View 1 (cartoon, rainbow, N blue to C red):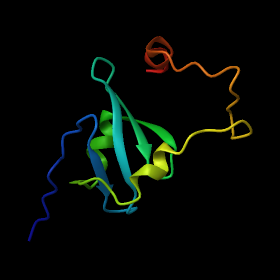
View 2: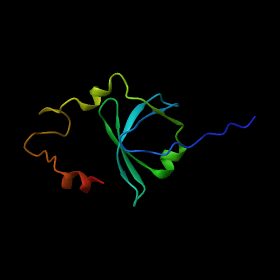
View 3: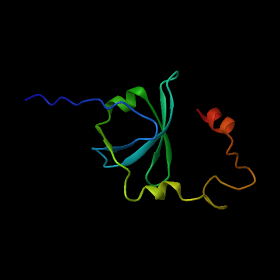
View 4: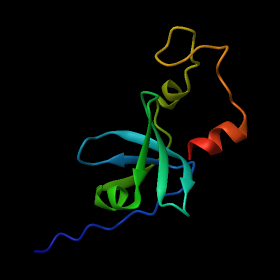
Length: 98
């Protein structure tokens, strides 16, 4: 029997489960022109995947996890890499990251 893995297309705002790591994450932004996705894991970490990495994952689309708000806990001064004076939440700052 041949195991055929169906590729799940990424959609911004949707949550996914990686069946290998059991990690849950949300696609938060897509840069289709350059083939990159920004993802936010349930623990709040932000990551980046390219199309080849995405296609290699065994993913399923899932509903909103029970603990989804953990990813949105507010940052505070002293958190790694964050201080209120240098934080820029403008759309221009985010698009520069992509």
